[in-house]
Image (cartoon, rainbow, N blue to C red):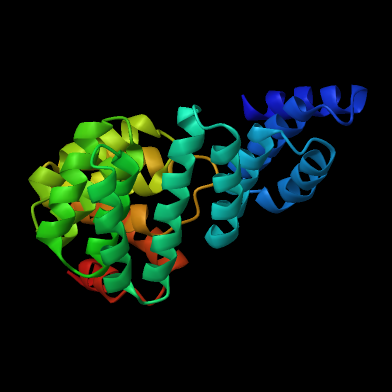
Length: 275
């Protein structure tokens, strides 16, 4: 319960404003709830008052990654690792930040450079699921389906509970390899690991529909459209398509109309409705 954790950490900080543990704990909650920018100044104060606080440097690195500043994050991660040479988590964080730094190259249109960097990092750390996932994502950006597939399959083998790796594996199978049946399994694992992730469950529903499992697709997509606060168009669109495949035309029309209400320029949804 992140809300309860936040309240508890704030109470502890009110009692002892320089206690590093509660500050790092609150910063972690803020980062996980999309408020990384709020976490940075409090971590800076903690580091200034306790320069040897390894955990503060580690969380600062994660916060800067969340803010898209991976190069700065690498400096904090390297400091934490240097101060705690035998700390496995600190050493792994350095690898995680290096992956994030390379993926920034992908975002800047330099996928080839990212693949080169991540291939070297993978060769140095062949058992790192994080590196395999990062390299798989870079291969996706290069539209190298086979290369991505090999890395992502290894990533989920190394860390079956990595929801993002499962999702990316499903994406490659579904979108790049056009194999919806093979995509359903990884998508389902991703959705099970992160039940509240609407992207994962929408992708699962889409793959199930494409694989001829319309009833299961409707079940999964209805979970998304029925979720409190859902405002997207994708789940409504795929729900409409699944209902069409199940010959439930009235239900399909309702779903497609709701999709078009959010995204009026969806030509495929218009075509389905006309059909």
